[in-house]
Image 1: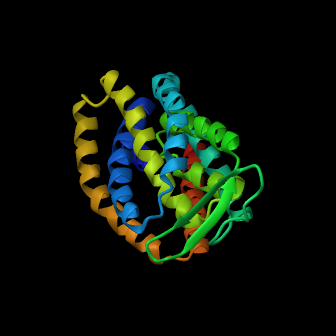
Image 2: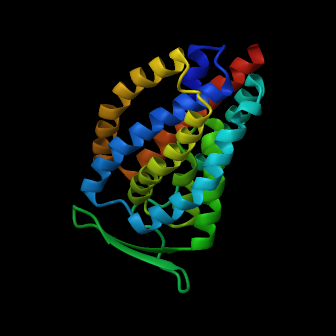
Length: 246
């Protein structure tokens, strides 16, 4: 969403881009979460914990986004996306069931609608700390946070990929709403162009989120992560090449 808005109108200010992006992400994640809830793959206990941890950072990131010049914003976002893409390609994550539970860690046992059982454990302190960072970057750069949360949840917290994608979507509802609310406070949605783009994009992402969640139910976990890394890499290169050309 951020690169699309940046390419669509080079004159848009970074804070306007992040405001529109977070508003669209909120509606997208809310729509997708409804579908994921039906699959019973959302870990609500972990999701609420991580979401609460993102709130202070999300508010801070949205508040300071207006201090970043557009070119600096593009480079920051491009480098960040490139790093995430490389991380996913080198460490694609655990495919289905996650790592075996570790003594002393927070253990989760879940059964989804298909009957698949997920038994794993993770460090709550790492989960909360990483979520705080996700909150800042999400609102500062206008990203959903899933491109950070999914790699962190699959690699550092041992979440199975399907649970990570579903739970991450649920977390986004709260994170994006927090950031969007701060942007609303600063009046960034009252700009005519921003309001029109937000409405137009939201009309598209709501049914798109339903379709994406449905396809995720049938896709292999490794395909999800490889597809995510490929798309992120293309976006990062396009932003950095565009910056170099300017």
